[in-house]
Length: 432
Image 1 (cartoon, rainbow, N blue to C red):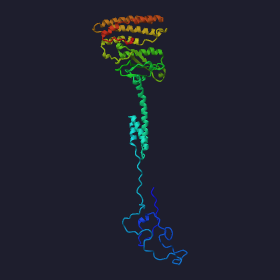
Image 2: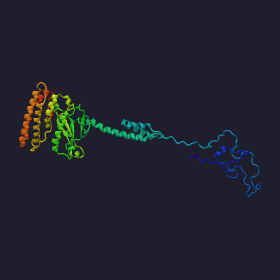
Image 3: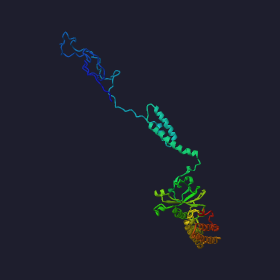
Image 4: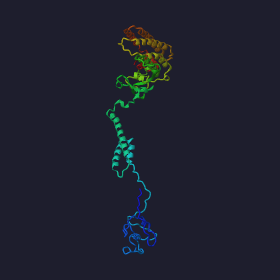
């Protein structure tokens, strides 16, 4: 707000007729008290009043004003600089300028910036900046930056500690490398580590597995994904899972691996639980598992990697191998073996077709290949008769007797043919 100026009344003209100087009008100072009371300048009193002018009772004689200076103000000395006495007001000020805003503390800004990539450093700088701001004179801004740096730094340090400390306590724990891939996110050709008993829930369910590159040690590989929801509207029973789902996975596994003897593996599958089915999960995950792990290659096979004779053998015995994959899981001590009896009938048909296809194939001129193929075909024909007897058994004991007879017929004939064809002779996956 501009200062308020209070001026005196106009001064009396000087004897020489000139006006008083501007400096005299601008000074705030009370003149001395004259004979006419406070504020008089020596002028005569008015002529009106109870006393006539010039009378004997008039204490002020009439006459011309004195020629000297009137009052305390000197006459104007003409143009030229005039220096006002000390304490005089120098006229109205210029335009009002607001005070400069307080600056922002640079240390607070640096603390917040460093709190994200380097939490401990940002936390320390934030504390130092906050303490310094309390003592800084004149005050500066940056308190909010300092507090934010402390909060971000503390949160980051706590999170890092929660992750690092358990690793330091148990650095060999397997779960630190767990990718945690959900079973529903697995794709064909994915290799992973089979879940252990500790990874299963109380209901025997598994939700995720640890996936690894197939070139690294693993013990399971996805060979097929079957969407059974396309043909089933309601959740199937355990018998459907143990027979139909298993056999379909076996067919897909043979297409994927081509040669079940390429590695000691067994067929596994993961099917949705009842709540999962209700939630929309209808996928059966077919898996080739290698007990004991240690496999460092994919089980996938390609037909272009095999000779015509090798493919003739694999195509002849493939359907028979698929049936072995789909053997029902009924235990021997169970009295109801109806599912196994039905399966034995399919085994009889499969072994008979394998013998026919082996005898119809062209084996070329390879040394001993045709003889080994004929020996294996004869074995399949004999095995077919044993499976027919098992399929016609009227009681469980008789069934198990013929079942054992059929399985004991599996001999060295297949190994000899595989050696003649240049194929691997490891433990067949279908029997693993």
